[in-house]
Image (cartoon, rainbow, N blue to C red; front, side):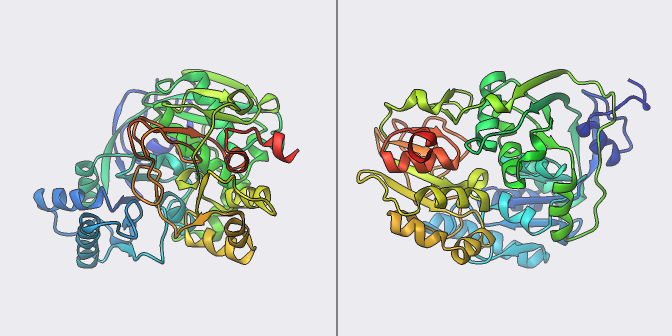
Amino acid sequence: MSAAAKKTLAEAIIAAHSNDEATPGAICQVKVDFAFANDITGPPAVDEFKKMGGKSLFDPKKCAIVLDHFAPNKDIASAEQSKKARIFAKEQGMLFWEVGRVGVEHAFLPESGLTLPGEIVIGADSHTCTYGALGALGTGVGQTDLAAVWALGETWLRVPETIKVIFSGRPSKWIGGKDMIIFLIGEIGVEGARYKSLEFHGDAISAISMDDRFTMANMAIEAGGKCGLFLPDETALAYANARKARDFTPVYPDGGAEYSETVEIDVGALEPTVALPHLPGNAKRAKECSDMEIDQVFIGSCTNGRVRDMELAAGALKGRRVHERVRLMVIPASYEVYNEALDRGWIKIFVEAGASVCTPTCGPCMGGHLGILAEGERCVSTSNRNFVGRMGHPKSEIILAGPLVAAASALTGRVTDPREVFA
């Protein structure tokens, strides 16, 4: 492929940040626009930064540590992690926010205008691909690589091949981004996009909200993807321009770019979809799983803890009560979400329905706290992973779903197609 060859969105973004030729498989040295860690990955990154002789960050306003996984601190070990991150952040003058002023990293950072269209975002967290919703190439790295980015402001990337995913048609009111992405992963498998970029197209995309796009980009990694990219259309640019912390330049793919594969999905034919244990690709229609009783429901996480998710869940739960043997945890992903839920009366709806509502945090998503599962228990979760032991005991089970399926299941005590309850 020559330098003039047509580029996919991933190739175009890398080319805009590198002097190397961005062809699939090439190793390119790239400039990084934003780099961050959380309370788990931050302290080891701090150690590596110091070990490699780092003295100062390449740009303190483009580097951050977000306390979200075990925050508010659940034990002494997590308190020590946060303390270490806090001290380093103060020494370096980098971006840092205390508990009560932050939230889950992948919701809080785009809300704060710190991840923007056309950028390269590097995070010591695998769900950094979330920022693809804005047309940013976000990807996760290990702590050592992040430490080097903090010091140098650059890193290397192997240019991924790109799978073009075309979502055609118009989704019904029962279908959201979670149903769409679980269905896609079910079609291509959890290794179907291994080290590839998923590039989303189609008229169905213009019909879904930014919150749904964040959900879909977030789970690109569950198909093995390096990133999941949406073109920065009017919806994305309006979101970014209203929040931007710095200027940005959106990047677009070339017409006629070469894709490794094209996948087409008719969204109009989709039904509410879940992922059964123990893989995000184990996709089934919710109505096929109605005999599966549950013990817990979790609505939240970096995947489905945003405003649209809270709105759908509150609308479904209003005037109803959670099943007597089900625990329902609702955790808004940020204080922007939490405050809107307060203002619009959704928190009261959740509490009156019998839910536990918690401060913005990752909570039980990765087995942290605020909802750990015991042996033999089963949870319907709006999070992104359902691996063995992900949310607690290795003999517990997680069923991934969107907010409507989760709310309906909380009411019935079993996996439930929302059309059964709300239609």
